[in-house]
Length: 357
Image (cartoon, rainbow, N blue to C red; front, top):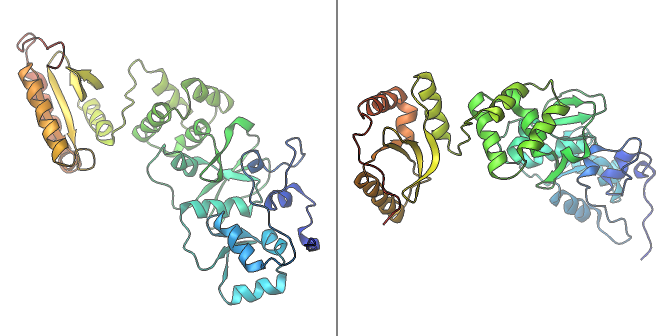
């Protein structure tokens, strides 16, 4: 089978086109697309006998439904054939030279891919978009954010652009088949758009899931000392007792306790062989969070009640707080906690049992 002649428009004359065609690019290339450090698109199969439309679909399947014009032409479809498919709505223009294939509905991964393709690999997923891909924050922004490295560019409908002079190779990773900032860089890059509680939780997830170490985060901060939110990240990491909790309910209650000037508890600590959500040891007070997603099912219900009974038998008081209570009546929750913390004189409760029977 003889090779198909590649149209002149797709001859790899610059690294961006080479990247789109899945061609190897030396890391020392003068105009290296930053995405090439982590990911290359699939190379179009330019062999005689291949059906161009089928090849376009194959490429789109690996790119969340999107293809670049350079890729389409490399399959053998010329400008006229592209116009026909646009009129038939088989291709839909999304960004300049970026098409959505086959009437698909793009998801957040596809929107990010479209932005990366638009800049021919000279941009990678950044900011809160990158943080959501790593699971550091729960909700992805509606419009994807990309970092354009060492090039001119600006935001446009459907893409938020951040211009960055340089990016260390270690800060470019692949996640969900997308070139994306490393977890530590995504954390720093998104910090300015997060409130303190969300940022604290993002740090907790980054450390607890071993996506980055404390040293890696600090090294990233050293490279980007003027990043928005950098001082807050340092404060959280330098805190003697950083409240790095997994639960949004825990973070919410910690904030309320701080505002009410009530003592902060130990969190996610072991007591009598159980892990409890919040513990005030001196007051012998335990707070457990009840939510349908975390405590559902008969076995879970029975297990929690047995734990409560054992803790009470050992001299602890157990207060359960629900998501609805924190959302609809948080001040009543704090008032009850303040009362509970105030009415337990030292030594009133018997000493704790060393281990669960």
